[in-house]
Image (cartoon, rainbow over all chains, first blue to last red; front, side, top):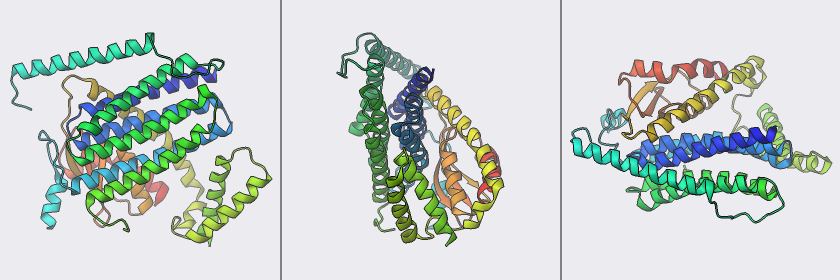
Length: 111
Length: 132
Length: 164
């Protein structure tokens, strides 16, 4: 029974991974790519890890995969945030169809 | 993008249609005729996990496309970060059909390394020193 | 002193998870390593140790987790819809919202939750003025007040009870 649920979790996670990487190819600029790929790939990999935990049970490898879930959820958004800030400070413009950019307005106001 | 005429929209629809057909074809090949890459004949779940590894490989190929083609440096950094997380998933998946539990240790170490690498690269983008 | 004890307990817990079947040798090595780490890093990580004794905060945290996971799943389905649609329906932009959280832990958790929920990504934090700059994939309103009400409010109510 646990094996069936584990395989379901693993394949749902694979589907999310696939859609995240498709977003990495199709979306137009850095920030949109960062959004799609960070959300989808983080939750997809966490889902794969949870499926592995369900299939292995409370063995050492299963407990380590739970630990890896916590670690990924804590660190992936932080690195996405750092990359977005670095990209904006290094002067990458938003996509030309964007609606508003308050961050650039505020930076120009300060300087 | 807004003032594009009717032929451009038709071109986009056509490109979307061709891309969907290619992806569905690759999925059909993965599901019906997978090449064996895991040679552990006695253990369970080998066919299922071979297909799962192929789907992850397809995602990795998308990431590699973005690394090769990305117009600016941040695009490439994003793709490298995402590739690191995908490889953690690879390590977790290889753990079950081979029955070797040390793959998940490699996964934890790889997640840590890729996090530190992404932070260092973003500092490099901002143009600061590393000690702040 | 108190923060070092809390850090010691947390380090020992993570050590036990890493070396799962617990026995005496692992216990000894874990106590040595966790004690060394807690002594060296001191109160760098835990800055307000009196908050760990409030029981109510743990219940609010347990209420926050399922809400967060549900928002994550909604975000994934949203991204899958936008990516697989032929026209790629996006109206991106960076908006500015304000927050009333002051502590660093609270702001970090708020930024992480915003990044993993539907359509938003935190770009920069202005801690003095209490502002967050957010990249929004489908901008519904440019005004500060309305954007704050849509994006931040549902997490801020709970996070204020946990971390402030």
